[in-house]
Length: 284
Picture 1: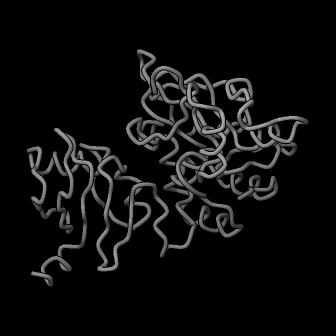
Picture 2: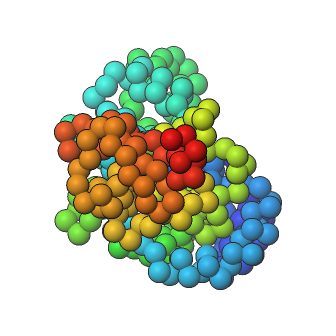
């Protein structure tokens, strides 16, 4: 989905920001899985939430909204080029980090548009594409950068994705322009859809969630208010509240929700089922 410059100027004008009159259209389809926004109605939503959005921009850091490293999707530069081409073209993401040797060693960002351009060159074949050559140089940002600083940096550079690192330079996750816009104006997609990687709506009304899903993302998508002060992922919340590493099939009720551990790998909770406490009581 494309945000045209006029819409961007109106949206950012609400928050005292500027996109630049000559800015290129900004694609908001990125590595977080799906579109953050894109309708003109986002401007009216932003106006209603202006006070809260401004506060969030100043008070939150990129580490609060990033995709955590455990949930990052990426490409292995040592894989066969045709496999990488297939993964990019068949997948839902416009941009994917490219790593070599280890997922912590990010050497670039592969943009689907650049890949398509390379494929239409005379004589080009998927097996002969030099993936590292067409990848953009990665942009590393500190995890303590405020959302306002990062949003302005995205606009100045006309970039959409940055790799988040800690004070030692270790990769912590990814942050995108759409991540920050969602935090400011909210998710304006159809409220009936759950468009988060690792979250699935079941026919019985329950939600199956991968343990690495961020609490903030779940709250935003479902209009929940699970606390995220002590934990950033849904698995971390269950461990914190239960004060244990639960076994599979153990269930807990807190904050108005019933959490059932579906899968555990070693000491990690990898999948949970969540339903409202009221729905859980009706089924007992």
